Image (cartoon, rainbow over the protein chains, first blue to last red):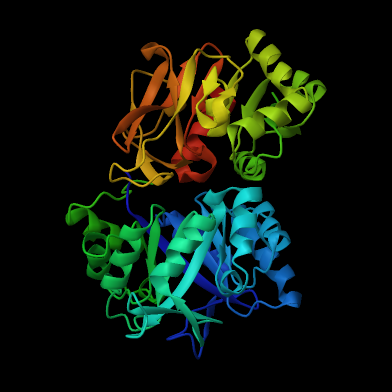
Length: 256
Length: 203
């Protein structure tokens, strides 16, 4: 039986790891390569790196980070942030990442998903999506871009389905409302999207305790759970989270 | 001892190289039959689509190189698409494969509750004794990404099974000098590296 994945998220700025609250006031908390290796040894099933201030001149720094991570981390990892075209995707993958994540750029140019899936395989194209509650949206949730700062006209559920049709092989679904609160994942949104698409959905935003992770697997129908602050600040380890998930009767990788 | 990694633009050659480098195993990329000749063992990795993969192998003469390698009794390890292509035929694009091992490649059924592609960590139940799994706990988890699964013709080939989408399939099999795993040992943490190490040093 397929095991639920614990995905550790590292936000990277200028080659250093950060974790912000509600996308603002990011503070540096460490070296991404060292942290990645540590999480790998600690049982993380997957890692995801977001270059949160991606700009053309910083791309080289991120590629170097990816290359170094690939030499130490032997579980899959994804890279997102500032991916504009097929060339960017190829650069990240050939540096050793397993997957590449597109977010704002895919909203502006959905064809990037199709192109990536056709040329590189859909399994490595991840749609990153930032959504927030909005009563006027058909599904009750609206898509945001530019690090959650800018609202779009897209309905979250419609966009998720369309992206999968275009070729996205996985969705990382981040709730702007829950992000950084550590009050738990947005279960309703997660379940709605996960049940509507046939690709894995990684729940993101709001994890504060192992119990939250159990909830998003059990009640949110998530295939994977993204964690950041709760492990970065040392409150819990990946092993703590997995022990609790296992205790709840949910399949998870326990030996590594 | 030299290990060649078949390079046919199929995606994950680099991760296999990185894993072998971490294990201190001498290795070389192989994109011509001549390079393949000089290798004691070959790793046949790959992510992608069966028909496209077979086309590139053919263009580079690597299909014949793989056949000759195996006929000489030299060890071969197929990974993911490489594991599927050693069989006779794939349902993916109705593709004729290398036929180094009798058997077929089938599509995982969708709509049975489990999502397809089968992506993530799943347990491999070992069947019988196989040196590839030496030193690993029973039912160790490995990382999978695939929509099609191998179906070797004989049960005696099967050394590991995994269940997804209502199918218990052969996630690892062996026939003569050929070993094949549907999962990605190069992305399966310490246990995956251990398996590659066993192929490198114990085969």
